[in-house]
Length: 518
Image (tube, rainbow, N blue to C red; front, side, top):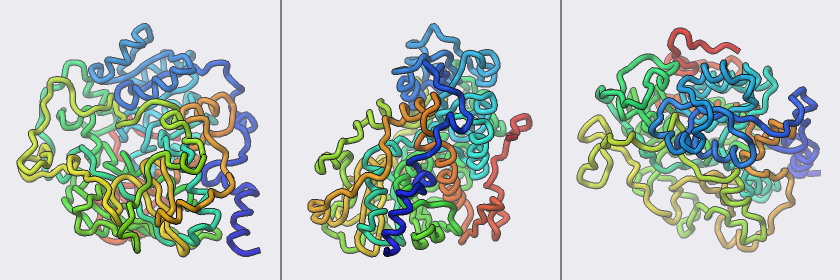
């Protein structure tokens, strides 16, 4: 038996669950609560993506309570559920409604994810937490440990984990079709949040229907600015994770799963434009080095943040100068495979940024006027660039857009968006390719997957034991933006061995009274 076949056989023998799915003990066998007839769900964050997942849950389960700090952004959903109790402080809701709540959906800014999710789990509530799992490495480890301790069902909202193409990508790689993968590239488009700011945004009056103190939560106090709320917080180091949390959480999913990645040994920002101490840069490239994993050799993963075809260092896929690199979503229909239900494969609904209300800007607050040349101007004034309006279309041979490329010793595979599409390169190879046997179980939909777990079924596909390690290395990549040089990482000690400065960003800085304890 050769090494590849031995590895393939080990997957069938039950090692797949460690990377994401397969035959695992039921939650009931692990001590979880028995099946509910109906799952009583509360929502924390009801606008934007919060509204999306709230309405997904409401398709099959009763909604019993709502919480949001921005009443304007959440207004459509608050009106739909106007007879339900409404709270501005999640702690008050959990205290007063605890006996009526079985599970909670959470879609709020990244910096509050761990705080709110931990509070829910400590009260025995199942948790659906929108991506990214956390803002910092330490918080990701904390939530993974908490899910085990409190025996609750969990799910991170990286919806592509439930898609057919995501799972087919893993099965193709494990079959040996493209050989050993020693290099992978993850690309995301530019965001629409501010980048490269050199000064904090100016203070403004707090809108009447926004509770600014509640929005800040555990973060150090600062004046209100419309450049934070309801969406642009994503670009600020103190609040968000930039495009890493916004899109790389999706696009890197097939890479993490198929390559069975754990923690990197080192990482480095090898290219950056628009460095800033307060916001993410305009664009950057980060290299992460992962050790061998069983039969899989060491692999380098390159993260191309805000990649555009006009960038001088855009990644050119070897030998694919005449190929469109990323597949179209749901292209497996050409192979006679179900499309994963399209959006229904994720549990229905659309996607977008979560927050205490998503969206772009509060009603009545004007955004910055675009300067000449078509680039959006951030709050730092003239010359501050935000590359959200210059995404460009597919370019032959270039990795641009939201997707990933796997470079193997026998071939190349690419995935798109959240893992909704997969193919082999060149496309002529894909045209004649026959899909491998199914190894992984298929998902009923991302929300349905979690609800089933809450009711005692199999653990959800992106539960915190799975998404926690994934979120750790994504959070590490966010640190590389801020600290130059090659950083050596020790996952057991949860620290960098060669950088005092980088270690300052492993844990969050929290306001007194907001400390996190397992």
